[in-house]
Length: 394
Image (cartoon, rainbow, N blue to C red; front, top):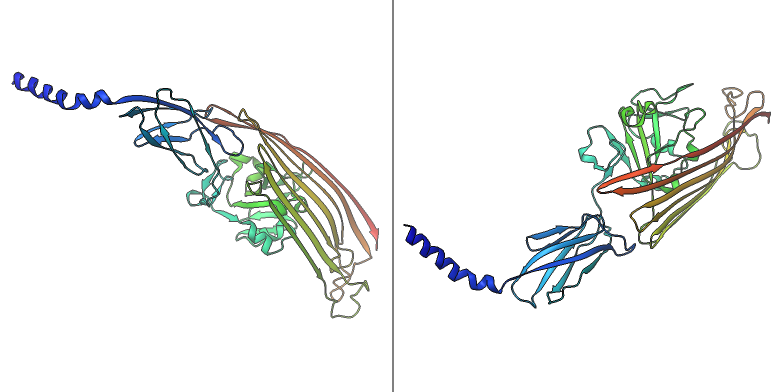
């Protein structure tokens, strides 16, 4: 039996040894970079047939390939999430030089994702809490001038006296602040003095997506999220520049009842919004501005404001990203509490008007960096709110 086993082993060596003698192992090394920013891509897959390698934090890879001939050419596929796959032909020579592969970003439509519920991106289908996602075309098609008007149309969400209530939960409480957290790009957007939302300060002309989480999230976001979260994600620059301009104008009709007209001039409402974003090498920016003037349909109730917002990002070569978001608002408006009578509901009782002049400003610096496969974000916030409230006779 041992003799037959020895003969069989000799036969295998006689058949396969000539083929193995002609095969040679070649070590292929290289670098995978972003085609636009020239930044290394960590986690890209480089494969030849069933043999594959993954790039490290510097974008480097090494692949051991078994080649039958010294001048053989093989097809190498390089792929990465969010980028277009690249297939290149490589010929093996005596002096194999490192390979540099560039990948172009892909603009394919992915599944809808949210980040509010767990502080990381996940599909809406996998959410364990009730979540509503509002897309930007709904804001643009409805000509939304303030975000609270749109949120008031979301099921189980009510706006009462300018404050959010989700599923009949507590909204805003004197001395305690809001019980629904408003976030703009992961940063709280509640005023520091009263903990309430200033809706005219929200940059609706630069909103990419609105996420409404209908459930307690105080474990992640603190006591201000006991009833839920409203998260606004702003739009950043893509490879192609984007410019949007929107303007509107309207007029209030005169009341049908006699004695309700307090001004002979027509009561007008008009506005203008401009958004522009662009990307150049490592630098990207998004600029938006909004002008709105409303004379109101009731005596003394007017709204006149001008808002500017800017998002800046710089991608450094060492995989460190610097970002700066800033916004400013100047507004002037008036209101009254009691009207004269049922027949004269547009007129002020006693002629006393409450006017509010506001000057608001916020500055959010941010630094993102990697340590191995872990990403760290360091964020800051400076917000200035100034309200000058006076009462005067009309």
